[in-house]
Image (cartoon, rainbow, N blue to C red; front, side, top):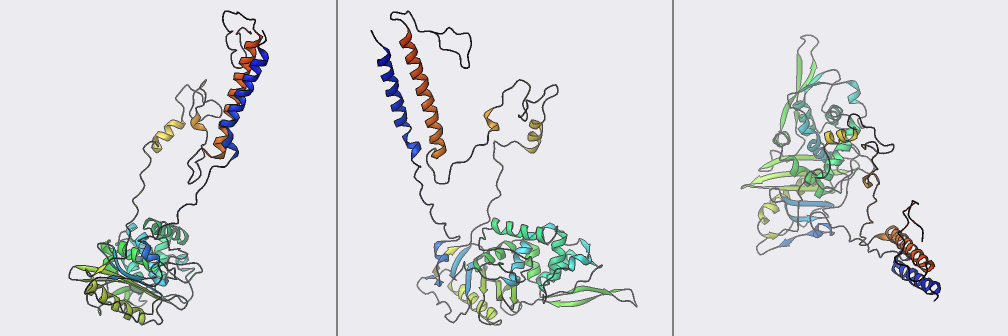
Length: 433
């Protein structure tokens, strides 16, 4: 009786079956294009032109607005009552100081006194608005913030930025803060809003910044201050330190009924921008206007939109929403605390780590946790090309082993009582057939 040809055929058939099972390894797993990103705040806010959904009795949106972008929103609910090109990215000018305040204001007590180093007044853009800070003099933090909000002083911004760790550190923190607020249209280059290539924001983002800022009582107080005394130099004759008056450059403050603030901005290159908040009958509205045709129109058009918003509240269907700040990410539950990590990296007394294995003890084999696992491609629903290759190799090895065992069985004489024990992996003392 001849068994070898029969076993060889069985081994070949098994190998063929394995190759068929592994065939998908030669074909890349299908990849679908990811869906387009949704517009922050609602799809209509990404559409060009005026977006409004009036109900019966709603007033008409002012038709003579020249601003390239604007938005009207309810500060409490976040509902956007109307907007035009809300996500258009434009130069923000000094309205970017709203984000600067959101980022830095909570860090320092208002009564803290700081002596200005000469280096803190370097690097301020030519032609910047200044409050008049002098080197080697002491200033309270609350004075510096009045310089920011009332005079739009870039010198005050730079001093506070240096207190915060430096201009570049502050720019980085501002960008992080913008991301936390989901203000993805904003790119920060300078903390004061001075014209820089690539420095951009949008009416939507600036409104997010104002809404967040107004939740801070100090922010709200500073932006609503109409005038104040600012510390000056020392009188050489009397030795007494003088002061001088500063006034808020916001032309609507004190003129538009119920106006709270927030911040105006203007540069020759950026044009005019304005973010305003006003309260009437228990309702607070936020209006942002960017780049109208003239400097004065930024105030006129803000006032028109505020009037429209108070009249239209409850008579329009919102066209979008001001999103909330992202919640701080909690650390994964499986991740050890820093103390636990430090403990895990230090072996117990009397134990020596195995070479190449952090935290192991002598004689232990490293676990698989020391092998970096690459994440699957975005949108992939299968093991991917690398996974199929691994499966192919594993199945081929199994087929080879099975065929080898079948051939060995063929070498045995017919009528053997039992097959020989399998040979231990890597050699050993097991009896060969």
